[in-house]
Image (cartoon, rainbow, N blue to C red; front, side, top):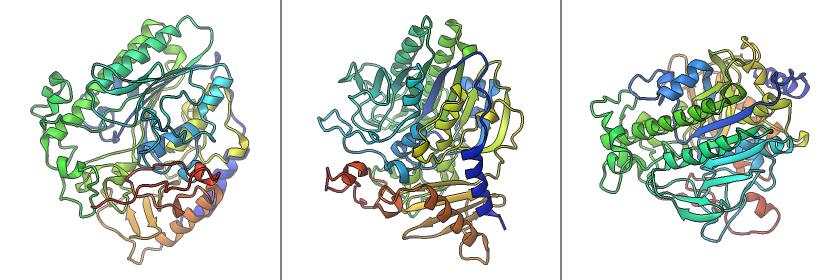
Amino acid sequence: AFHVISAIKMLAYCFFFSVAIAAVAGGPPNIVLILADDMGQWAAGAYGNDEIITPNIDRLAAEGIRFDNAFCNTPVCSASRTSYFTGRLPSQHGVHDWISGGNGCDGHGIDYTYEEVAYTDVLAKNLYTCGISGKYHLGDQPKAQHSFTHWFVHQSGGGSYINPPLVKDFECVNVNGYISDIITDDAVDFITKQASATKPFYASVHYTAPHSPYTGKDGRADSEHPKDIVEMYANCSFKFMPQETPNPYAHHTGGLTRHCLGNRQCQLGYYAAVTAMDNNIGRILKALEENKMDEDTLVVFASDHGFNAGHHGLWGKGNAAYPLNMFDTSLKIPMIFRHRNTIKPRVEKASVQVIDIAPTLLHYAGNYSLPSNANIAGESFADLLLSDSSNMFADDRPIFGEYGQTRYARMNNMKFITRLTGPVELYDLATDPKETTNLANSQNNNAHTMQQALRTWFSFYEDPFTSGWTKPVSGDGQMHSVSYNKSGMLTSPAFAKLSHL
């Protein structure tokens, strides 16, 4: 038995009643959060991939804490990004899918998170200057949100790396160049301007890499990504990108699996996008060093969710298949924290998750917190960053997540996946890390225990109105805010209908 219910009660007790440690000595640190897009944990040298070229990510890992058991709660971009900012689950904040409607540059903007308090709102209230460069994708992009005073964002969620559509000076324009370079130019400029400031700063550097497209219209990687970087992988075996038997549940809405499975050009493009991003991360680190801010700055590197690049016969994340998938390759993310001379470098096995980031950054910055009435699902692991002990967050800490009507629990090396309609799955990750043998129909008693754990967890945190369990989330996009529907402002469907598979 897992004693799961007791574990959940203990987690809640620790969150609501523990005494926080003192803030970082020396005053509030600057914070730079670098967020990749569609980057699986397997796609970095620091995590054991000896093919991919990521010296700057590897350097951050060597100089900081590398979390080996870091997970997203929802394997799709907009939902996960909202959880990053708020510490809340989709069944609380109401963003359940990638945002396909209301991005704003077409004149129709929807602020999907207008009812939420983000950690940047709290940082700004405590005199941080907040800037964002790159992908936001939470709706109404032409309008600065959540206390950001510097606002340079992508018009939607993705698109060509060449001459990308961005929001600059609150105007929707195309900017000449390669997007990872452009995002970094802006971020470096913002960081450099803070060097003479008397207040601490927070910078979100949100790359679109390594999101598709991996090839240009001619089908070649070097038409979309820097040719010199693509050529670095000319003789690569791509052993960390196994092109497995096509998944019968592959969701071909965007044609990604159909286009990329077994396609070497997609493999080249994915790795090239990561390496081009890594080169630019080096520029961020150099800017901090040249402005003598590296020892005063917490640098975080992570991804919005994981990614399958041929794994399980899929290319994509949670919506690469329907029913929506919860494979570990979709859920596991890189997560690295570096603060020179403050955080002791090490590899950490403690289990952490996306919803922990908001309370952790606020706690680390100065014992700040999100509103007490927000019922925050995440927990701060700031104590863990400043301690050699991982006893506070065990590696078998229960992790829960959701994507619409699909939910998962991960604990004690077991993973349980349940759906409102559709197959139930149970995997023994200790003996079956690739999740090939579904034990749900066996005599294994874990399924019932984990089902109860999921129900207990969500009954404590979900809002009945915004709960994903009752929403027809297909993976094909969210067109409207469920909060707008709640207030009676909108009667049209919030979610796109499932397209043909």
